Image (tube, rainbow, N blue to C red; front, side, top):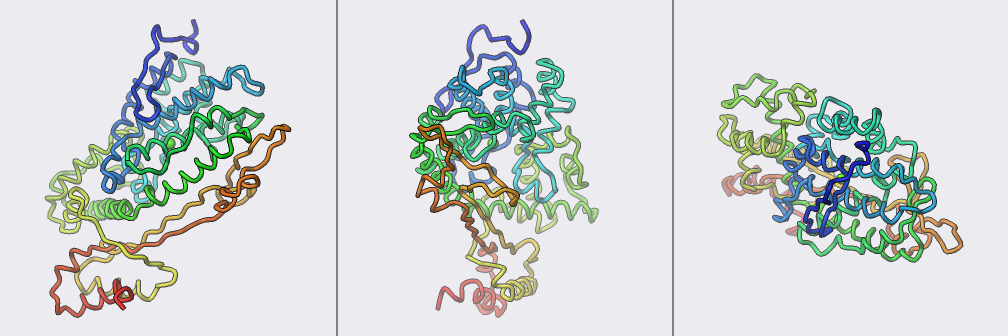
Length: 435
Ligand code: CA
């Protein structure tokens, strides 16, 4: 029997807190899960620094990837024998679902910004390079790794296949919303996925939803909206993210200035130099990062050791609402005052902004163009979701942005009460609120 059609003698199941069970029958999927590149995802948390805000959020990208696979597996079971669906694409969809996050590194958000990397490039490299995953996929068929890479990269010719993994209602989002809600313990993020799966229909180039499932989709859109503001953009998580970025910047700067680290940061060197190879990239997971942070707490550089101590022991920065576009003068003044107070503003002062667009209708050619969700009406016509749903219409295309200023309130408190600099800093930070 061809490797692509091989089934395990007995179905394997993973117990899963969100989907109850994840079912594996294909030999290829089982082998991919066992590969070293996929196992690495156990050592990368799905939500990065969020565990410092919601202590339950320790789940990994491994959990999430299995979840996305399971959702796609269930969708395809419903699609079997339906018009427009080509059963030949089944294994391709399952592999793309399982492997879509393969290139995520430790604390992706900060790492990618500081070291100018892109996890999507690494996903492609793992799929196409010299890896166990590549060998398994090539065994299916010469050219199969490229097909999986194209689906994940959204360039695959069959857009229906692509839309299962990436669209405004795809298996990726449906898994992370529920999983992140479960592990953070918040009451948002729940919606009736079973119902949505039952009313999904394959069309030529996209997955559509039967109109009767509209309310389940509304619930899904709203839960995404709430999860963004309650969990993903939580200011405490962003504070941890700010400190994490500062640590990486500091370590890189020290390295460039030929600082003698007590423990040579071998795993970081290629990152500091700007172009880690795939092997170097994969060797740096979150366990390794945390090892360095704990070691750097004992470094002689006071900034590096303080920032690491803050991250490890959760002594985070405090924050206030602050819009740098409107408060340019305050920003300049604070920057100067921090310098006078001997708090290096490059490391102890930061403005961070988050924004989200909960759902968007189709705006061809615009930045971040997104394919809208289409509802299938009983007369077989398609209608864009926000034209039928008042709830979705009310948040469609509306971008919300939130700006905050982060600073070490504990350091300010420690300054003598009669310090003029301290009074002026506090005046700018809290002045308006006290009036
Ligand atoms: Ca994902």
